[in-house]
Structure formats: C-alpha cells, structure tokens
Length: 86
Image 1: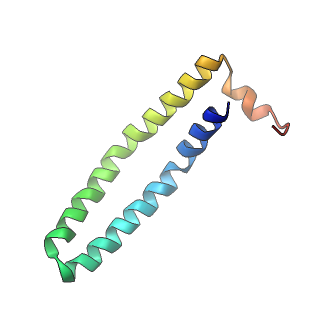
Image 2: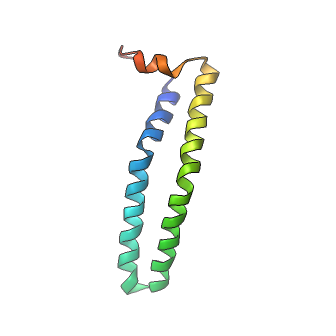
C-alpha cells in the first residue's frame, strides 16, 4: 500500500517538479550564453525534450500505480475515502 501511495504522490507532484526542472534548465542556459554558447543551445533542446517526455512519464506513473492497485486487488477510490491513520 505504501508503494501505491508513493506512486500517487509522485504522479501528483510531477507537474511541479517538471516546472522547476525547466526553470533550472532555463537559468543554466541563460548563464551559459555568456560562458559557453553551445551549451545554451543544448539546454534549450534538453528543455524541449523534458516537455516532450512529460506525457510519457505521466502515463507510465499512472499505469504503474494502477498495476500496484490491481496486484493488491484494492480499489483506489477506497483509499481516498479511508481517513484512518496508518
């Protein structure tokens, strides 16, 4: 059950994590413009690849979470209604 909760929290935090990753990539690219311009161009493409991989990462996390629930024969809706402490 802990694995399912971990996967759910990662899946829910993924947009914020990717926003910070893209922001960090942009800051590195901005600093690299004056130090090593080819790195700045490379960071732009890394940022685009990050954005392109987002749907695949979200879908993979969703499928992993559903697989864990299936293996545990547990309905995720029951977990949302469960308010008892572990």
